[in-house]
Length: 426
Picture 1 (cartoon, rainbow, N blue to C red):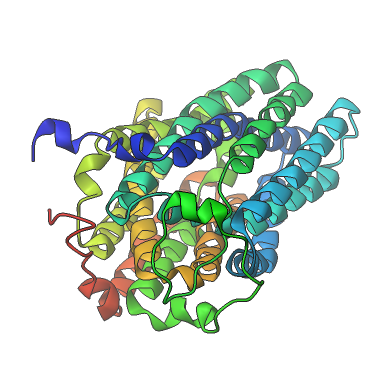
Picture 2 (picture 1 turned 120 degrees about the vertical axis):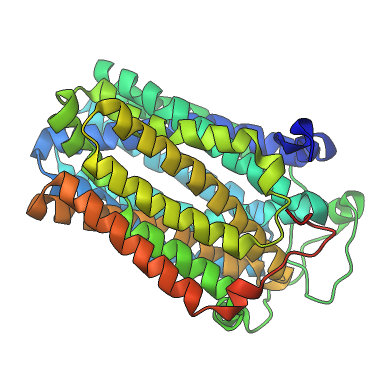
């Protein structure tokens, strides 16, 4: 494979105007949305000085994902996905406005912050399954892994620039940090409004082109049975989801960052964002060469290797004595996480029939989003008991052992090979 072909595959941005608009809007809202994460961590830490409270942010975000994620999947498999995205994005606008208001009024209530973050997470749970189906609907099948890699690239750019921006803004004013997220949300509303109607397709439907789909009225709301069980019955999908759940729930470090920031970097809110930005640096490097790994057919193996490497990076982060070593470990974690997310996403989306994709995407989102939040809460409690370094080492080692156990007991995951028209053997 040539060096050029190993770089980021930009075909999805050229072949689909709709995908390009949604991707650009997601990049903008992702960058500004990271300021919410940094501002909330800083605000709650300032009020409480407790890693248990910062860990509670993970619970506040994770529980609504668990409760409302299935409903989001049902909505995506019953109704026009474009309409679902428009309604939920409008609700997000209202929730972020609430975060701005409470900070501007200096209400100083950690419970209020957690409640608003829970509402934001709940609305996200309703929208994410519909959003996850967009690459498969807007792109040719052989460009779907590249589209997912571009989404991962956008996320990593957000994670690199957003926390740094959020730290700077939070240092000036917490309401300002929340306010930039509020100001960017209309971009997503415009991008979704310009999409064609996107009703779920029956599993035996033939593909239709964009002009036909734009002219097709939404079908009567209904969904094919069996969608919720598909993720468990399909061995490859089940193994991929369990691998991600084990990795994130056992070793997510976000809640521990404020404690590490106090221990190693004097607690400056501007440096708090650097931990997330370091993860993003690794993710960006991996995304720059996504043309290489989006062609790997053995996505299950790729995800497993990356999950084990993530656990090892967390151990290194916990044991690191020098600051540069700690940031390097986080960069490695970001790189392998990006590759693993693309591998898992391609496997799940390509294996799942479109009539089930909303519900399976809901399960995928609950695992991919609630797992880290609950893992972050676990990390905060453990750090309060044994200290931040020990909590990171214990979490990383536990994740490695769990992931290897899932691989050894998941023949469907080990046997998975992408179709040759969708990927090229590495």
